[in-house]
Image (cartoon, rainbow, N blue to C red):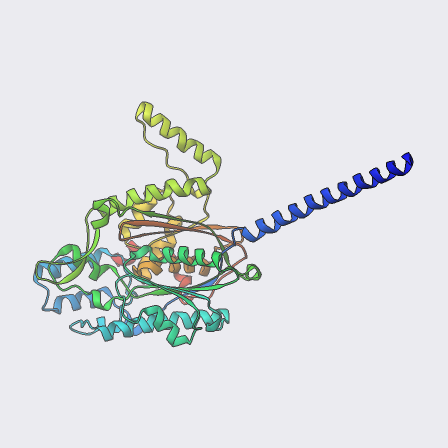
Length: 448
């Protein structure tokens, strides 16, 4: 009896042992499955295209000067001011404007603005679909940004109608976000792609110029007539795991800085009416200082995410030293974190200020300078023309990191950080017809 009881007790302990360990294994497996399911989805950039305007839309400086001079709505001082800005813009004779801007006098109307929007947006999306062999009905998320033109129905609705996209597509139309809206759109699309796994997102970044031609006397508003040019970009993003094998880039970080809580920052780019009730967008003289403050805040958030420990240590040590000995703060070397830089081509002063603030070399801002020269300031799409430039020159290699950084009204400074996951090679894109002649010395060209 004792022997049988011992055997029975031994069997019970063995069964309990097996059940206990089986439960542990099952619990561990469930935890792993939960963590895998909750794991932050990777966001891939499959491809993108930029708009190349027809040659008929070119606006050489001499033609622009003539249009301004012959426009009877401008007084002599306003004409002289615009000509001075144009001569300092460092634009080539190939920058383009909408067809309506090539008429005399320049006419503004809703129909012209819609025509311009259709031309740019439909062309760049068609090129992207053809390049990626994507069916429009495959798009799950659509994000379109145009800061100054927001008609009803929306521009995103116009795209859905044109390409006969699905009725359950998640559509968003962003306006009033300024030149950094392209990165805002990437952030929104990325968040949606993480929530809605295995989806495709189409982003369209552009600016419609027709209704923004200013004919008054306010100099801060006249600047917009000289600084902006026609352009746009379409970007295809994905959270589908299988797209990792064909994607160009993976999104590593996105950092947004919004300084609208500060009155000076809020008002430095502002749409308003002048004393004669002409609507225009004023650009404050203090915009460089405002942009510098926003950049510093954005760098403070971006640095810990990307910089090696040695750079972070030097930065932290400099802050301590400043409090004790009032020394200047150490500017981290972001060239140790990034191989390439795509800085918003807002103007020569913006690029030079960024070059100085980040301690960059001329080759680091080459893509920005060449984009400003050939295409002008195309607002939120300029960073994509710059990335196109780098690809056309065959500089994007597997493992390279690129920092896209843009400024916008509000005031905002936004950053998107991408890592190249496949060898891009020499891409055929908007730069391909002239890339053999770049880079060039812009000052020498303009002197000639």
